[in-house]
Length: 243
Image (cartoon, rainbow, N blue to C red):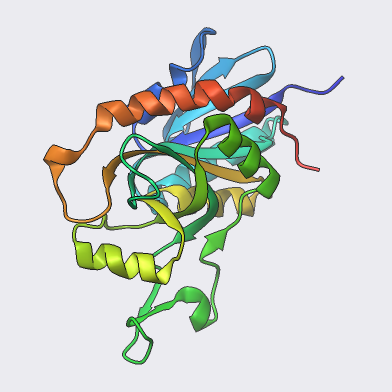
């Protein structure tokens, strides 16, 4: 008999965590970890642990690593880590109100300024260090995108949210096919990779990437889309196993 799946869902803030939790009816309970709190949901097919890790890649990496370590030491390691939340979308591929799935989780601003590179930036890999992209399992990406009826593409991780058309244009040129930007995915993916656990990123688009216009943000609607999205793809995530 196959053991129930164990999934860790990492969001930035409690509002995003709660939006994911609304997709599930079973009773939820809280699990205390050093410096963090998990919300645990047990369904017929899986154990879901939901973690609001904090804003930005560093907080996300630290909290995710802590949860992964605690599970491994307990003898109940996770089989999949999902980074989830709202994001800015690059129109027209990812309009406000849409969902996106990452087929590449890429850090946009880890590197060095350069006076010789075409756009003045060298990724850290060009300097001979680390990585800038984590690739979720392609088969899982396809299944989740099909379940959600949404696009799959690059989701960028940034430490500073884009606030101008010029910056949005630079990111488009540097990352063809980019769908969205958020602030935690790469940190979550780094922690997951260190533990040898596959990662996925699902985002609901709350605003367009470009000039900062708070009046144009649709955070409530995006959170509702996140709830609906997990309702649609939960079975896919619970049944997926890495082969």
